[in-house]
Length: 283
Image: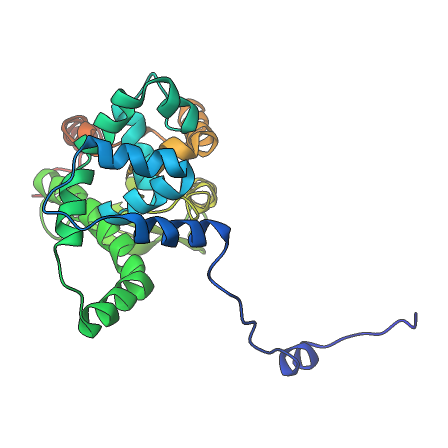
């Protein structure tokens, strides 16, 4: 074969859309199950059992659609409710009652009743398409904003308004380069404390990105600048290795401490201590 040097423009000019069918075997099985669901004023444990007995994977997918949550959210929530029995078909077959009660606790029966009892119009279909398209991205952004807002409340309580920069690029150790951070205290020009905030819930596809983000921050900041990490979301349970790497960074001192929403009292206390230690009484 003759050696040839390709160019960017050549490849770009030859690109074309790739059309793919969204329905696979699982989707077809789910659609079959949808047709088998009888319209009733209410549903019971036995209705869930029938779905899972017919086809466990399709049944779980259909139940997830009724609940209107992602696969990762369903898995994470079930693991909290069924810590001993697992969440797969083996767990269902070994202890179906406990498994089904877990789904009931998530609201599966009530959601089935609501969904089946709601008439669908063409307007509903268009709204649903909007939801499954950009709506999933908006949902992820809303999670992140919620955790950021809650974190900012603590930062503002400890340091006061105007004594921190948010969603900024802080000046690094050399004074010549910068890096992104969610909070820089007291300012992005010369931060003594940096906070990075990341919330996850619908998908774990972007969680590995935080490892690179944290490494970039630790490489750019001064060694005597404290880095704190605030995170939350059930999908961390599906990516334990990534969390282990973050914890290793904390163990090595690259991150001072990792917090979740339930640890906000600790975060508030630690921010107060850092304010005192660094002489940042700026209110």
